[in-house]
Image (tube, rainbow, N blue to C red; front, side, top):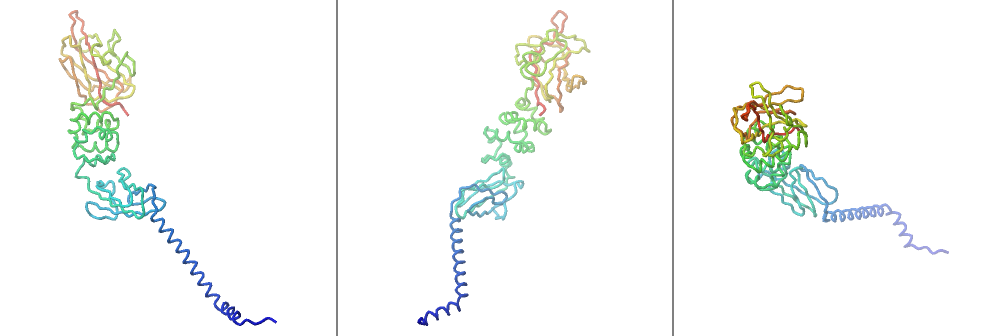
Length: 373
């Protein structure tokens, strides 16, 4: 016969009576455990070093991974919730980050952040750049140098090269009309502008700049000599021509050799047609030219005209007409805003060789300007 165990029976009865209470306590304990694990993992991630690059553009943090960053903006000494826009005319004065490395990107107009460790704080200080237009010019090419005068920029050829090879910087320069005299009177500035097609073309096409460029002592740095050194009438490119031309030697006026010359025998009557010229492969805008005659002979009163046309069948357009007794014209400015393929110097008058024959003996002709882009 089985002996009745009173204590065991009482425990079973209590277990059945408190079953729901035990289940609720177990559920609460398990939930607390899961929450504790989550808190531990979150806290660990906050102190984990992250070496990925983070980028802030216009106040928006773009990143994936752990880490935290707080940003503050000081604009002209006043605390702001957002940074100024790029077009507002501000520059970055100072970037100071705690638990991170931060640098300002002027091109993207945002903060590049690296090596965020735990909770990082970056304080960004901006100031208005309008008081210093040179600083604004440097900012267009993302140049972080403390130059305040144009001469400082012109003396730094590395900076000058960067500025004149940047379209945004050239656009800014074109609009800085109060700088025209400073720029066109500086050899370095004119040289680097002339070396860059975009910058050179932009200023030459601008009515505010072109007159000062023409009159500059360094005009030939920007207004390039367009005719190559010719070895015959058709090489290396384009075509030299003249009339009349018994010796077929027109190219000698374009061979960059002052010891050779193109003899052009002419009828010295008032209505005679005597010319020498060049056909470009691509249309060009001639803004100045150089004309060197043979110095061993005296000259009559020569009428000299520069004419141009678009194609072989077009009528010639007169661009310039002068009368001169000079053997040499080292620079003659041409008021020409158009692009042509054919240019010629038409002249009457010349040197009498005492046998009744008149001729013009041309050592050098150079056409200066810009080719069509």
